[in-house]
Picture 1: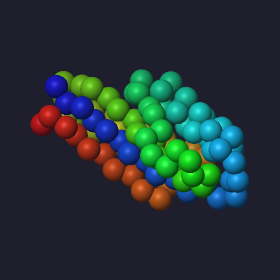
Picture 2 (picture 1 turned 120 degrees about the vertical axis):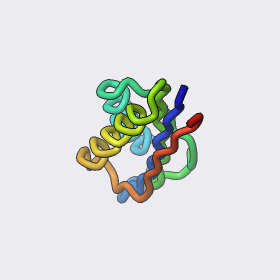
Picture 3 (picture 1 turned 30 degrees about the horizontal axis):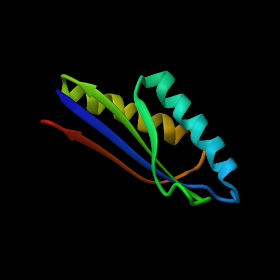
Picture 4 (picture 1 turned 180 degrees about the horizontal axis):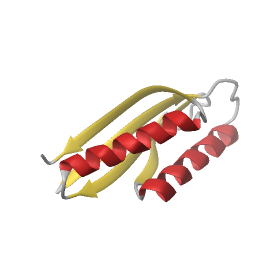
Length: 95
């Protein structure tokens, strides 16, 4: 069993409220959940107005499939252009 974790850090330019941040987070989380069937959560910088960190997780018996799924999710987030992506990482646990 392989656990794949995609970590995404965004800079939210011009955002001055947690409500605005939550709006961006909800849209990104919904897109990831609906298209890739992954679990998504905000994992850091909860009180920051201009930084959003999300993690998407999948469990799969095949490491290549988990890697490919998370790479496609990353490509979708980059293309969505909801916010400036400043960091991304894909980690596979259990190989």
